[in-house]
Length: 259
Image (cartoon, rainbow, N blue to C red; front, side, top):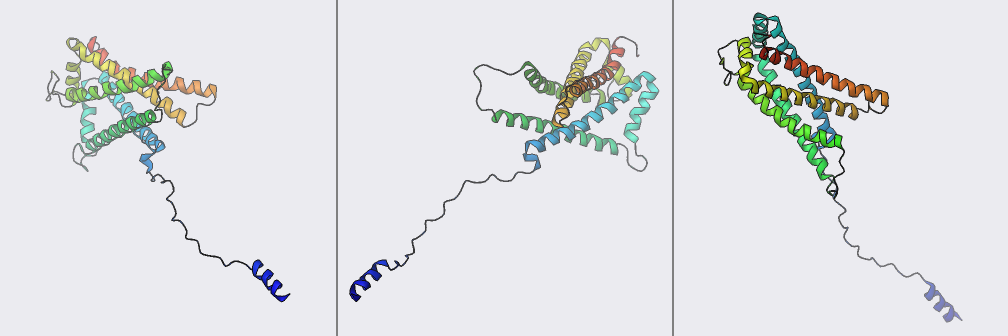
């Protein structure tokens, strides 16, 4: 009797737990490294917005300065001399002008870098190409305008510096006054320079309109139809005013209104 009960006790006794060797933990998926502000699309869009604002402010100031040519040679030359001597005598001549030029070069470089990198990132996000191209006309127009318009603007800036700033390719030469260089640069015999200037300014206007409209969209201001239409019209008006303000002086010189 005791033996049978002992057997039952042995059968129902808990089995001692053995330590089972654990498998080494497998590494999980690698988490992407944290990117800085400039590594994100939002950061690069911010770079484009800030540098674009800097360039727009410069264009407005430059346009207003060019319009002084209608006030005569003395007014225009005085304005050009003021740009070189602003801050004097506290600062050496061209100090603030040189700083402005450096800021503009950096703004242009960063603006182009942000635009190209965002375009490449957008292309990589759409690796599958449709058999039939379904891009809207507006999208294709904006893409080609920004791409080729940017190239034209860069080439024009280089020519414009050689022509009006350094006088290297200007008939008046580097020793001529700013007013005389302006008059000599847009003589009717150099109609191709005026045409190049006109095309470049139109590209600047299209670029500005597209940039303003993109900024309005990024800020979420185009949700309401009335506001969207007003902002679209406003962007077009600002661009048109800038283009007309820039081409006014060259056109008037070529037709003999300004001599």
